[in-house]
Length: 111
Length: 118
Image (cartoon, rainbow over all chains, first blue to last red; front, side):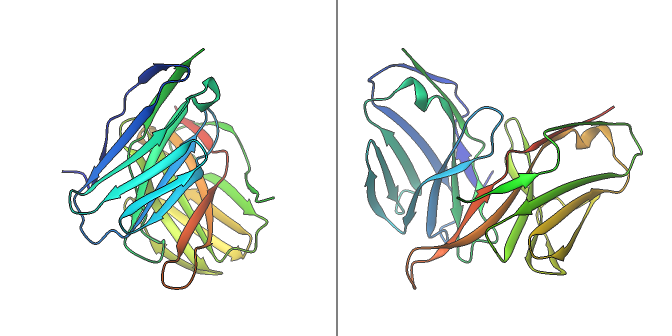
């Protein structure tokens, strides 16, 4: 079993929809949870970062961590065609040297 | 603005060739990383370096070596390229996020090098 599981998609939604992206993990020692966005032919860029459990909101994006269920989510409200990208979840115990990445979910937002 | 650059966007090499991939960051970061990215497998860590001349193996170091002679530059070397090393190679450097007690390193990625080994 992989340490981090992420549905690869693709996920196709109409413009304006609420998007839910999810990852599950098996290592209960993970404390740092990140979401990266990767546009085609580009490197990943950090979108959201959460320490331990709880919610974090940044504009149209909300990250949720449920450590009891080992489940993290990224919600995108009012999705735009410019949100079309691959979204990778990432997790770390501490120190940032052994970040584990999910395989990424490809998202398409149709105009 | 944060910048990580990689020497080539696309590279085609032949089996058995020695391949050098270069990465340069301009943020004075201590930590640098090399990953490969393959469909369905996500990002897998090959090597990382936390200081000049220091290196640590990641999850898949076999067939690779690295060199960090200067703080800003981290090189990945394929000693004898093989077809199963055809992949997207991503370099990253990291800095600290958050306040003390909640901090971790966030990684800034370069644009990637798509390597094809024939």
